[in-house]
Image (cartoon, rainbow, N blue to C red):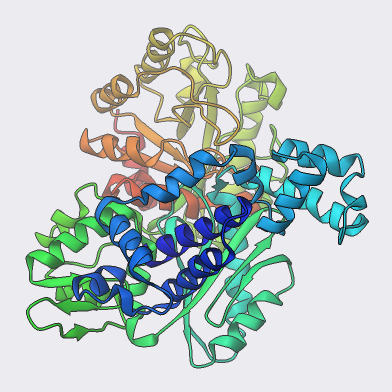
Length: 572
């Protein structure tokens, strides 16, 4: 990763120098050095330790000094100075796909364009097409690139990125000669949002694999194509990077490119303490320079005297120390989930019938499911009046008689009113197997009021789970003001479970608060809040969030078999 970052900085320096009309030989020198550094298979740290920076093709004394400066300080002062001296908008224009320094300079000189906004205005007014070597097609491509640039400034939700990545992986698996096809980066770690989609693989025919990758259906733009790496745009704004690496180094490469940066720094310190230097390509014995290669990530961790660390918890939050002490948790898995305790049907605002949802749950291998349609106070979601809920209870009893090997639990997602009271009386809640209490209104309450409102609901002997406890929607709505520490303390006291809502726009509780819940002894329920049969597949997002929160099978109530679950729910 350092090699790539240094190459990027050197390339940017070349671009900025050309933008300023500097000496052409200097521009070419920086670009040549960038290409050499990017294509290296040896880590720059190792080259520097040997004093061999100037042996890199295109790297002379001046550029070597800048590389050394970056490795020591994390920055290149002359690069930052170039950025400071270049009008901000001009540097930003270089980020628009298809615009190089020469084109940006021409746009500035001929049209006075200095910002992306000014370029967009010029293109919409059809002034760009009048320039040399430009035309209507160029103008259209510029506008399309600007739109993509605007959208790509935002991180991509996990629920958007993962299906795209899985589809691409499915296509690449069919390419002859490809091996070790694996996601990397923050997507492999299951973060709730990601920057780009990173994919690694090995192959004896890397150029053929790269060619197949850039020609996949769905690829809308090829940003870069080399012999072992390519970057493309799919789904309008999502950048997907594919790297083909040496098979013998795959273990260290996948570890490195999975991250996080903080985890990798800690792992390098561990390696140094044991007499090794760790790079993305190998583990090198400092004493004699012998390189040790790993084609499996597990073997690298084992060689360092550690347990293999699941990608989801590689955030330098104590996982390295736990792995060295061999006390890592056995994280919960999708296969541990026995059922879903928060599902909607067409009785309220769901799309499918109870029968449809049961059939899909059985297909997924579940033992049970709780139908938790909204209570009557949420009229906008067609919430159930008491008589309709009772009618539904009777229907569920009949369905349970018909369905073999599967149990349907009577549930409700009862609204927590603004004053903390619940939307159904105790006698009705007492007839439910599962009561999920949630907030869907009054989001503007102050922290003290909202916190008290949720805690009062938990005081009810009938509330089993607090649904989507913070109320946030990723990229759409901030969490309401609530003191989650107090809420979790109350949950520990009352024995109320907290939900990890697996809907990819929620993932609520998030990983940090899920881990805190575990520390306080609070149980969690991973539910999909599905409003359709396909919504049940969101469980994997909730499990990823739970894994990032260090949750084990025993921390999650819907990993229990039916009888144990019922004993837990009816413990009062």
